Image (cartoon, rainbow, N blue to C red; front, side, top):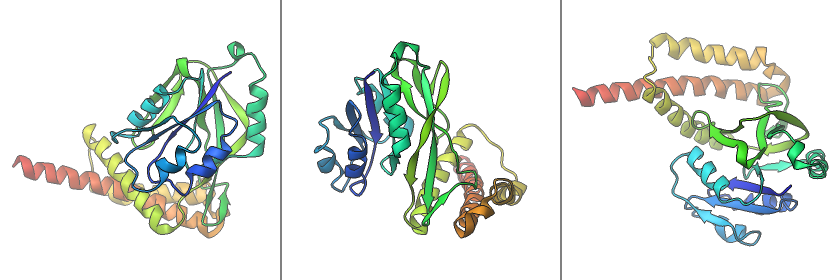
Length: 255
């Protein structure tokens, strides 16, 4: 069972070394950059010679390219700010002792996120199962930007253990990522001719807050949970506000 680690990056000099060391068990590490302006490439080359640069055309395109450069029968994809915990490493090691032909085509793994100094176990952020280990020949990428994901055509099982997500060092970074992602989401809605009503800008953010804070028990995550709920509501508002703005701008151009 040859497993290739597949990673897409940009300006990850603070994370890439620790990630590659965490992936020392992998048969190969494939890293795809998109014109980093820091030392990401230089550091990555210390751990693997399979470092590529690709113009950014979307996350799906970048993931597909990364997977295409792997030589293993199996792919494990991971982001630069994620790490495998010991239990997950043991699960993968046990898996490698089994006959690959008898395995399902994919394995989903729970993701535990650290935010504002706290491990978030509610707020809709946990267990946040992700398809991360899959048979290359049975896989494809699907989903809506910026949350594309790997999928498989066959059966899927769950691996014991978690991968740890050290996300968004501060509120400014969280806001920057949210701004980027809501722009992509608004463009997707626009391309799919999604209608926008004024009530959407009011009701949907409130509903998102209630879902995150109450239904998903974000209140159990303390102040970080409240911040997550507020940001979730704001992201919904911003997504639809950007959609409205884009529709208005396009209408003005047509006129």
